[in-house]
Length: 259
Figure (cartoon, rainbow, N blue to C red):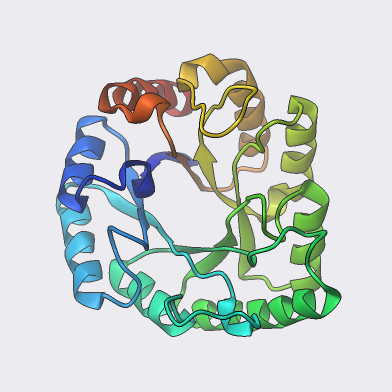
């Protein structure tokens, strides 16, 4: 079964309280809470508070959108970056069934074999630790990381080979629909949650209304429904950063998912 959700970093400038209200009014079912503003890494009291706000509104926490990038195995590690323990503890207090992580800071072609191996080894540890808490781990599907192409993502998941490690998915920008569909089908058994958006051919930051992407998303959802896996389909980014357009997108998403 698929559920409708919202990614909180879409409205970084709004409070968690405002976001809960907006998502409730839009009649979506859950929220992926971002780890940079709304539920900061390591702030366990805030995680508990946001969990309560979410659940009291009749919503679910769909994921913890962390900004953990495996810096603890990179030579240019920064003290400001979150530790894995902080991320895991925060997700646990938030009641998140998923943690989103980022596969490094460089694209697949720019990453050395030694760095790739270091990230693979760290992925094994991270996936194990999360599994002990009953939390799944999913990569951000994004450029400038080791998930910057269909092939690179498949290669990374295969190299790690851990049953608790997956990838989130969203349409790559500035590529043909056939390429997106090929990757979606290839990665399907390892796809966790999905970020739902629609951009113009110019790519970022030219976000359009979801209804303008109905043909593309009709094809994506047909594939996603084909294996019967439970997934969150969550709105991320809205046209003109507009609340009104968010409501329109939410109505579109509800129609796509629930009819």
